[in-house]
Image (cartoon, rainbow, N blue to C red; front, side, top):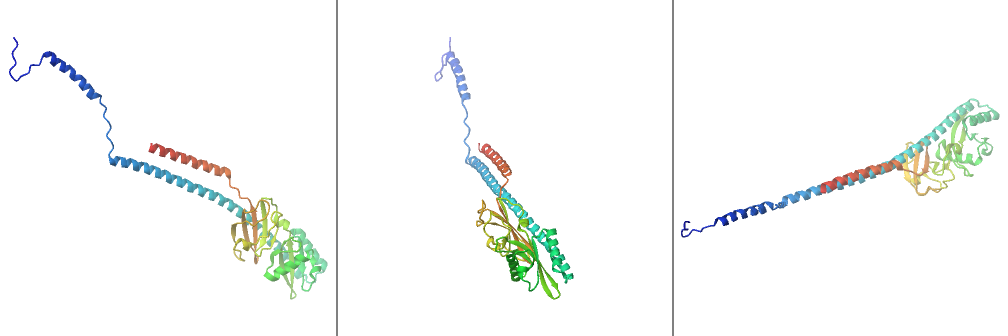
Length: 327
């Protein structure tokens, strides 16, 4: 006999109890199967992420700026190397011209001493001296000018127009070396030695062939020589305009040694308009001798291409780093 439930108590059948126990397990499974959502980042964490990306982008921008500046510096350095090389070769050329003139002048001085010792030398002896001087030194012409001598009948083989120009130049500038102009348009370089003998002042003048001074040249490279007053000689057919040193803004004086490079646009000729002109200036006795060398300036394209490829690879590597950091 089952006991009766007291008042206020509820009797739970066994079947119901067992059913409730069985139903509690699925509830536990549903609780375990829920996915926990990640917590949203706080405001401080979001700010730190933005700062990190900003620093990476700033680094990338600075890197690209440095790369650009480096490329500009490399390009300028390449051009400066070419200009230096051109000026260096031009200066060497000017030095060779000056050395040649000094050599001829030294021979003239030796001959002048011989003529001074042999004051009573005959005209034939003087001619022999001068002929030997011309032959041994590849001098174009030599003349001995004596006071009161008719220039047209002067000893030697120098043209009358050239002698007139030489005398005018010496009288005007009081120098014994320079450039002589003649009416034929074939300008010459000359050097002269004064001979003091028995109270008389004779002048021994020698002219050097412009062909020797000019040397070899091509259409892309022209050697031009002038004195500080703009008188020019040794020019090729590619350059028709007389170049005056002062017009190029050069600082040419009688004592210093100067090297300048100028970008000119007035040089006429084949493929030379507006190209860079290298200038070498040497002091020649009491005057200055200016050597111009005009021609194309070419950068080593192979070396420049290698430089561009190198910096391009560095830029790509930097971009990859930025991409990884931002991603």
